[in-house]
Image (cartoon, rainbow, N blue to C red; front, side, top):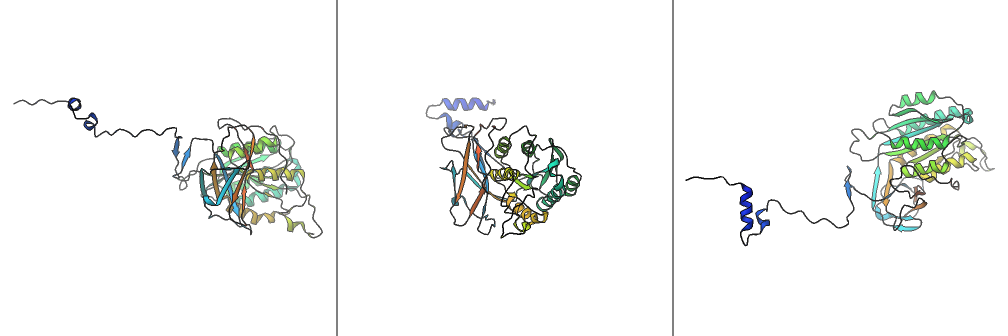
Length: 363
């Protein structure tokens, strides 16, 4: 008796032709894929387990403070409402972001206008680095600001080296502050990714610290363009004024005791305050460098204890206009600290949409 080997594909074909035997039973080892969802947005899981949709999201980072100016970090999504141009929006994503690695750009004004305050700037910059930057997680770069901005030290976590570079700076030339803010934001967008053991963290916190008198006389970019770059890139700006033009009231005879409540600000002070408030940061007006020690510790805690909310503005196409953001919390006595708004530019726009400088916020 002879046996012949019959190809398996021929057996399957024969069975499928037998009446009453469905073809799909012959191929039961290969079940049919489920039907695709209709008009479902493309989603991509990130390393943190959350899902990011391929849509035009507005992402807002913010901090919540209580009446004693202490950070509140245990709230949930249900505690917040978000408004875009005063229109309620659906919160698509919510997250408590704690202990993220920091990428800090430190802008040091070295123009001739701050010559008398250069030593103050150097001490303030050094104090900030040693109070906020952690060697194992964070990195910073240094940029000098005079006739044109220049990166004088790329990203590093070597605090002693950063301090040495800061102390070598000398004052002279004009001031291109707006160009420096614009270029500093671009530099932060090129910041290095986290390294082990933080490699599993999907994000970093990008911060720009500006130490200056706020004056500008050489920039090619406008104030509005510089601020728009920060807002589109999601970069928070903290500013430290070097101006010592103080006016105190009869009740406050010692200016050193009122470092956080300067009663009459110079034009440069107002510029610095606008950069910080509109980007979600804070402005400081110290009289002595020692006034900043506690403020720097507060900034470090604030940057590592923030919330993130994302939403898609209902019924709006990118119109290249500025739109306000307001986040409300349902607990009495709490205050939300967030950026004021954003420009609705197309996601594929290569450069920020120029905007006219907006008036400085009220103090």
